[in-house]
Length: 129
Image (cartoon, rainbow, N blue to C red; front, side, top):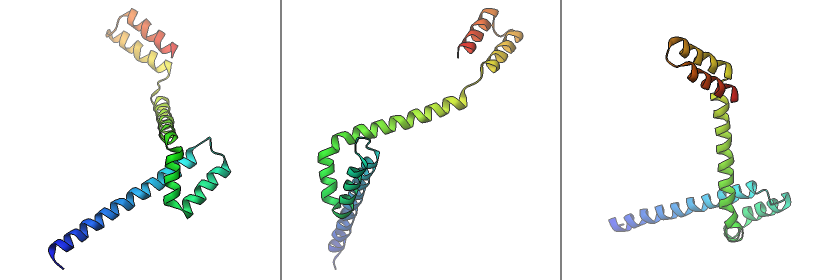
């Protein structure tokens, strides 16, 4: 076997591997979208999954043509919900109670770092939150 035959054999192998990986990613994307879709009822989801198992290439292609527009919307919605959950968790951990904020403002006032007016502003902001 010559160098060029083995070289093109390796290139062909990598090409088929990349195609196979892209195919698997498409299958898992379709499966994730089927599970995530709230408009599909249970039986419709089951039928899509059964067809995805027995006729995967054709089913993935039909799903992408028939329901592909909504896939991006559902993905964005899921990402937004996840981000909101993370943001809420961060806010709950970082949130400082008003008493602690007022104590810190009072310490700054007694140290002479802030004025009485600034202290009142900080106190009002702490009590408002």
